Structure formats: structure tokens, C-alpha cells
Image (tube, rainbow, N blue to C red):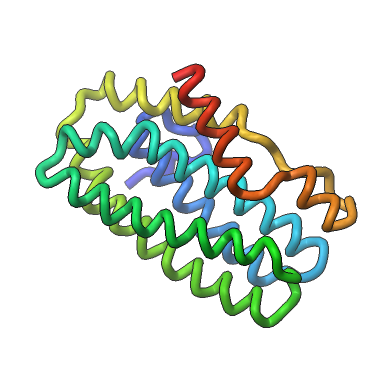
Length: 186
């Protein structure tokens, strides 16, 4: 399978699968860093997760519900996992990034998110790829790329972390802005 992350694929399945690779990599970066570097990596991770989950909820899940066999049940399971991940992220935002509790929770979240990504690729993305025309997949991919392009970016490095959190906005605000981008321009 060709790695399309560099060319930024327009097919929504390839696009989201390449985001899974980026998410995996950001978890590794965040867990191996400390101090300001960890804070910065965590903000990047939250932003990517916010964009990714919003694209799935607004663009992919509705189509999967209608187009794949037993779609509603497949999507329901993914939404439940996404909801749990959001709850954990909101707890992580309140912790010191260098604390043992943060590391423990982030490690658990990584395992859950990677498991979730695997299920999405196998149960949802692959089947959507079989059911939809390449035009539909490209059109969904363009909407996904737009959402990524206009979602809020992280604050400048070196900003004191409490201020950085305010500037970046909590995870929930990132979700709102990514959703506005998709709904408004999709």
C-alpha cells in the first residue's frame, strides 16, 4: 500500500487513514517529550484529534450509516469510543503534562485511540471505499481537507502553558470550530 501522507490524498479514506498515522506519531512524540515540548506536542495532538473526529462525525459516519451493511451499529460503536476519548482529553487538559497521572492517562488514551482507528479502517473505511464512487470519496476528502486547513492552529511555542491553553482553546472549542468549518463550507 502506498503511503500517501506526503501528497495529502483527496480520497477521504486515504486522507483519514494518513491522519491515523499522524495521530499515532503525535502520541509517541507527546509521550517521549517533557515540559514545554510535551505541552506543545499535546496541543498539536488535540488539534489533530479534534479535526479528525469532527470530519468523521460530520462527513463519514452519516454516509456509512446509509451505505454499509449494518452501518448504524458500526457507527454507534465508533461514536461511543469517540465520546470516551473526548471525556479523557478533557480530564488530561486539567493535569500537569509532566505528572505521572498525565502519562498514565495519555498512554491509556493512545491504546484506545489506536484500537478505535484500526476498527474504523477495517469496519467503516474499507467498506465505504467499496460502496462509494471515487467521485463521492474525492468530494468527501475535499471537505475533510478544508476542515483541517481552517481548524485553529496551536499557539506559538514558548508561551506560558496556562496562556497557551487559553489561546489554543479547550478540545471542545476546537471541535466546535472544526464543525463550523465543515457545516458552513461543506
